[in-house]
Each structure stands twice: as C-alpha cells, then as structure tokens.
Amino acid sequence: MAKNRIDRRALLRGLAGTTVAVSAASLAGALPATAAGESNGRLIPRGHMGIQLYSVRDKIAELGFAVVFEELSRIGYREVEFAGYTQGNVGPITPQQIRQLLDDNGLKAAGSHRGLQDFRTNLEWELDVAEILGMPAIGTAQAPTGNRTIDGYKAAAAEFNEWGAAAAARGIKLYQHNHTIEFSFATDRPDVRLYDLFLELTDPRYVFMELDILWAYGGARKYPGFRPVDYVKAHPHRFPLFHVKDGVPLPDPQQGNSYLDVEFGAGVIPFAEFFTELDGGGRFTYLWEQDTAPNVQPNPPGSLGAAERSYQRMVDLRGER
Image (cartoon, rainbow, N blue to C red; front, side, top):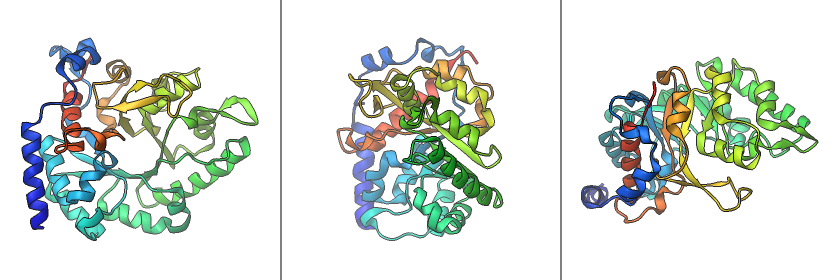
C-alpha cells in the first residue's frame, strides 16, 4: 500500500502539471463547431458518463482499483465498465472488495466485457459476479462467431438467446459489443449484412447491443451502405450502452478497423450530429474508451490524463437538443 500511495502522489502531480497531449489548436479544429456554443444543449448527461476500464488498464495493473477508482471519481466519471476483475501485481481482490471500492467512490458498474467461452463454461458464476457488482448488464467484445455464414450466425444467435434468457431471469441484460467485422457480409450470402442478421435472429427481450461508435463508423467505411446512428434509431431499446470512442481514418480503409482511435475530440467522428439525432439522451450509458490510451505520453499521467481530457470534452459537447 505504501508503494501505491507514492505512485498516486506522482500520478496526481503529473495530472496537475502536464500540458495536454493534444494541442488546443488541433482540438479546436477537431471538435464540432457547436461544441463551444453554450446556448446549445448538452448532448451527454453527466450522470450517464462512464469509462471502459480497458482504457486505463496499465494504471489498474500498476496502482490497483482503489487508486484508479478514486481518480476516475475525482475526474467526474460515474460509471465504469470492466475488462476483467484483476489488478496485476497489486494483489488479489474479490468481487465483494471491488464492489466496496465502487461504493466508496460513488461509482456504479455499468457492465463488463467477458469472453464467449466464459459464458459457455461459467455463465452462472459470471452472473453471480454481475449481481455482486450491481451491474445491470454484462457482455462480450467478441464477434458472435468466427463462422461468418448464415448457419454460423444462426448457431451463435441461439447461444446468445440462451445466455440472455438466463441473464434476464436474474434481472441482467446480455449485450454484444461490435468491432468492424460484424458489419461485413455473410460469406455464403454476400447480400446479407451480418449485423442485420444478428439483430434479426436474436430475441430483443434477451439480447442487447453496445454500439462502439468508432468501430461502427469503421464498418461503414469498410463495408459501406449504412449509417451507424440508424441502427439505434430503429432499435433504441436494444442499445443501452455506447462506446464513445473517437478516431482518425487509416490510409487504407480496409486495414484493421479502418480507423485509429484517439482521445475524444481529437478525431473526426461527428458526435454532435450522431447524438443530436437520438431522442432521449438519458436513456443511454456513454462509456469513453480509447484502446491506445496507455501509450499516451508523458507518463504520468498517461492513460488517466487521456481519461480526464476526454471527459471534459464529452462534457463540453453541445448540439441541437
């Protein structure tokens, strides 16, 4: 614990004394023109702003949940989405201890990313942990299946329906988080988009979606023919969670997820336009994520610096609502 206190002091000094990694000039050019308009409506309610903890995974491994939760609460985040329940070399921790740390810092667990195999082999334990942590939802960041045929997705949808029914029996929503590949087309039916097929085959009572906004834009760039916001507008109650992730396009649209993720406000994703089209901002949970945040320099503050800057830009986002 003494080491963690020393590390925390260094961290906070870094947060206080470090200039932002993204220059004010570049930020002004990246944010929508409406962002500075105080007369326009705030698009992301503060009480629904959260973070996917994968963004600060290096700090959790270095400092532990206690220190990271305290700092996230200070920044203003109110919800967290887990990417695992361990804290590196800091030492073992139980779900009950994690829940206490959440409560101590005024944080709520919005959800958790788990593997498909975790659901196949240990579903009841996963739901037990979700209940302990007070999570309303639990999900996966894996594609429903690697078998991108019609039959492959039928089998995957049947699995998700079964898991979702078990979760719903305990008052928990099961969700799937997208990358770009889910927006590709079935290998045996090139006229069928897999994301559409999954929505059609899964039971809306039991299976929900977490839209990673950046990777959805990547899907639209890589596999054109849709607008990401239209999925939410068509199925608003199936999208309780967003990953609010910003990015810049890769030179080759077919490369990876088609975009490189960056701090919120430093990319090109039209968030003001996206959120303005939606009705009922308070119905969604907005989770900031940046996969590359642990690479942010200087360090300290590193990924927590990116978290603080991105939080403030999310707060400042304005639109027509």
